[in-house]
Amino acid sequence: MISMTSPEQYRLVETRLQERLSNQTTRCNLCLWRCKLGHGQRGFCQAHVNRDGTLYNLSYGILSSINIDPIESKPVKHFRPGTRVLSVGSYGCSFRCGGCHNLEISWGVSALDDLAKGESRQAWVPPELLVETALKSGVQGIAFTYSEPAVWLEYVIDVSQLAHEAGLYTVYVSNSFITDEALELVAPHIDVLCSDIKSMRDDFYQGICGAATVQQILHAIKKAQDLGIHVETRTNIIPGKNDNPDEYDEIACWVRDNLGKSSPWHITRFFPAYKLSDIPPTPERSLFEAKAAAERAGLENVYVYNDKGCDCAEENQPVEFYLNSRGEDLHQIKKCAANCCGEEGIVLKKYEQATMA
Figure 1: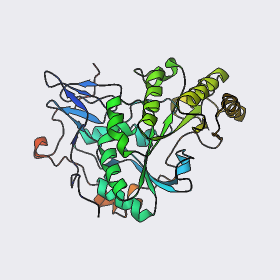
Figure 2: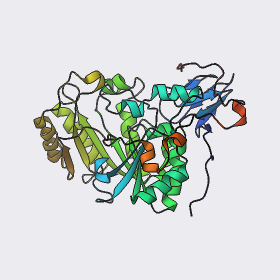
Figure 3: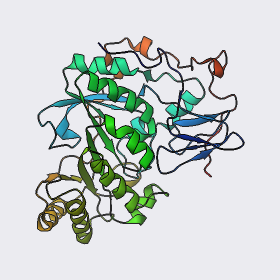
Figure 4: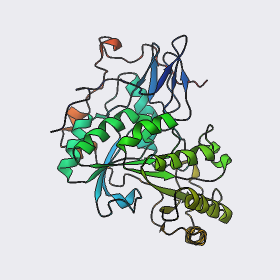
């Protein structure tokens, strides 16, 4: 029997890792942006909002996409091979990747705007229903993917606790731009981390996230493994951006020296998208050059994918398809049920965009 732990209807949930400061400001300590926010402001991810000095997660239980996949598609090769996962994503991300293939289901700026104004019709799925859906679907695990799971860590933890009680495993597909505090909080509830190592250059990371450094990302990946999570890494090779043979060698050597020579490294092909639509797909020779560099460095499990570049929701069926729910019921307007939001459930009386400090 799955125990009831979450709200019975949509409402804001307090951000787990927040630091209350003076003058009703708060600092979010989920990702390494560590946004400092005043009343009415939202963080870089757009999913956490300060209301009267308390930080709330707007996207708790809000699903942008659901899909059923083999675990190998995450990609994960060395944990429960041959099993399937219920892959879920929500809105909000800590990066702004120029080649993102999941824009509509990850960044979700307009979807989060509507949530902030109490006008959203996005699907709200409490943790209990998601786990029950996974069990009815006959999958063996739940994967948090398509956007950055740290952004909705409160939901990830609540779902993962119930998933483990029900005998399901959990997969966390991440950019690893996460604080130590958040990683330590979620680690007991996550079985597998599939993390990007996008580059070994700070300028690459700062082009998609002005606050990020390579060392921060690598630190989080190594810490995840030290905390007992099974870790696999992935690099999307982008022509003219991170396709330098020296960089292949540097990534491979880091994986070998920090995660072990048997740690899997997945090499994926770039396909044009968004701001990088003018860049052609990665030549196959570049993928195999990276594989050869990894093998020379001593890595034992290197995988090349010439048919995919990311973990994308390929079927993109409506959320209600998997939940066995009527669309009109699932997509009713979401107004926060908490009394503190007023009779109309509007989150903010004055809607404001985020600013950083």
